[in-house]
Image 1 (tube, helix red, strand yellow):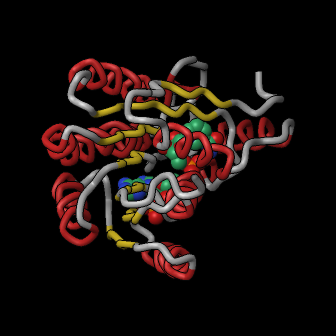
Image 2 (tube, protein in one colour):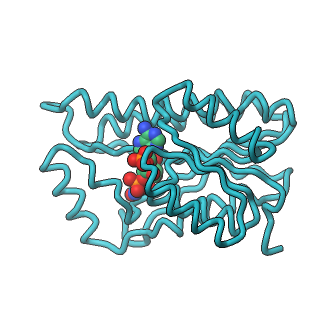
Length: 248
Ligand code: NDP
């Protein structure tokens, strides 16, 4: 079956670049109608046009996941305009690496508000409807950084550990009600993620790390998401950890 998601509706946050964009493409190619959310409208315009050219039903959402009302509105509009919501991919995130000593707490707020509260708001908005319909997938984009803490990544680590804990607790809570909660945990992927790092030393270190290996492509992670959500209903892929072959 080349279109395993035919008839299903997906919402991908952070769809304007990187992993989210590649995931939206992969889900659409698999037959899903796709709602794409992020803040950069020009990037979403281009993606929406591309998906429509490929024959997909698309809904473009102006979405800042740190805004609870915007999260609720995104879920409501998806249900109204695409006819439901079967797959939520909580992908939006920021990685503002740096030491804890001397950090700008504004970096911390951005990470916690986006990576943690964003996932919680979106999940809260979507989960009741999924429980009521007795099916649905929530795929949370965590990281290797959600399993292994390292110096220079403390608050990013904390944000992704929070995602893992939230996901596992919710998984237990909704077990037996048809809803699946999954974690996808990439290692280094070639995207715009490191562009936003504010501490110069941390930015340099992450660029050096990237230069020392063949990083994953966003499409490699999109395939993992597709694998998770296209399983038969009785199969729950709880967790997928994907590193570049060269990454320690
Ligand atoms: P990108 O920077 O390319 O993509 C991040 C996406 O998140 C963008 O679409 C951005 O859109 C969106 N975003 C950021 N803040 C917000 C916000 N407040 N509201 C809505 N959308 C937001 O990086 P990646 O594709 O690499 O990152 C995607 C996810 O993958 C993140 O959660 C990241 O932590 C995770 N990850 C990435 C790894 C990597 O090595 N690249 C490794 C492990 C995990 P916009 O700015 O338009 O709003």
